[in-house]
Length: 435
Ligand SMILES: [Mg+2]
Image (cartoon, rainbow, N blue to C red; front, top):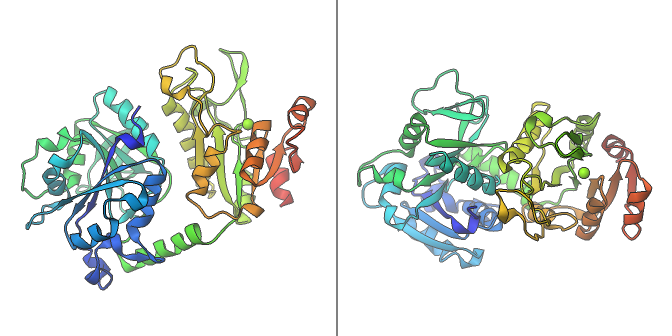
C-alpha cells in the first residue's frame, strides 16, 4: 500500500498569474496573501497533516521569493526541493518533462494556485489498484454539472472514458479536479525543451484507457482572478480562523441502516453501494443540523475490507455515494473520516497492513483529531452522536458532549457505566430536533 510519506508531491508553481493583476506584480501566486499567510501555506499544511513529506516545487516566475519563504520545508515538517524553469516557457507538461531527473517513479501532481482538500489516501489506493490493471495514472474528477468550469471529462459507470479540454461534447459530465498521480515513464516519451500542456498527456492517457478516476465530492478553490481570491479568503476565514460548532456522527445505525449479511448471518455495515439505505428521517435530521449552522462530520469504523469481507474501494464508494445523495438534496457533509483498520487478526484478507493497532479506530480519537487539524471547532458546543459505547467513549475522550442514539438497552448500559452519555435519543432526528 502506498502511504502518503512514500510518494513525492510535485507542485507546479511557475505561472505568471497575469489575471490577478496587481496582486501578482510583487509576488507569485502561491505567495498571494490570504488572511495573513501565503496562499500555498494552506495546501501545504493540509498535505503535511495527511502525512505527505516529500515535495518538489517547480518554479518559474519570482522563483527566489517562493524558495525564500518555504525554504527546506522544515517549518512544515516536510522536505521541499526545487526545480527551475529555463528561459523559455515550456507549459505545464514541458515543466514536468524538464523536472524528470528530480522526479521519482510515481508522483502526485498539484497546482500551486489551487486549494484541493480531499482524502489523498483514497487517491493513492485507487492509483495502486489501477496500476494492477495496467493504468499509468489517476485523475481526481468532480461531477460538476458545468459548475465552476466547463465539464471536460466523460465518466460512464464509474469509469473515466475521456478527458478532452479542447473538444467539449455534451456527454461530458465531470471535470478534472486538479490533482493527478502519474507514473514518471508517461512523461519520458515526450521530447525535452518542447512546449506542451499536461492536458495533452491526460487526453492521451484516457484514450489508451490508462488513467483511472478518483471521484471527489468537494469543490476546489483557485485564485485565478480577484473574485476567486476574495471567495477563497472568506472561506479560509470561516474555516481556519472562526470557531464553529460541529456534530460528529457515527454512520451505521445512526445515518444509514445496518444490513443483514446473508454470508455471515450477522448484522453488518453496508459492504457496497447497493446495500446503503438511509434510516427514516435521517436526511431530515442532517438538514436540520445544516440549517442550525453545525459542521457535519462523520467518523466511522469500517473494518470489513481489513477482514476480507469486501474491498477498500467499495468502502470508499459507499461514502462517496452517501455524500453525493445528500448533495443532491442540498446537504453538505464536511468530512467523512473512516478508520479502515481491524485490531483482530483477519482470517482472509488482501490488506494485511490494515490489521494493525491504530489510533483512529473508535474509541480512539484519531478520526476526530484528523478533523480538528483541519477546522476551527467550537468544542464546547459540539456533539458526538452514535449508537455504540465506543462512540460515546470516543466523544468523551475527545471532549465534546455525547449523545446515545437508539435503544438504550441494558447490555449497552453495563458497558457505559463509567461512560454515561450526556443525552439519549431514540433516533438522530429527535436529537437534532432538540437542539
Ligand atoms: Mg454504529
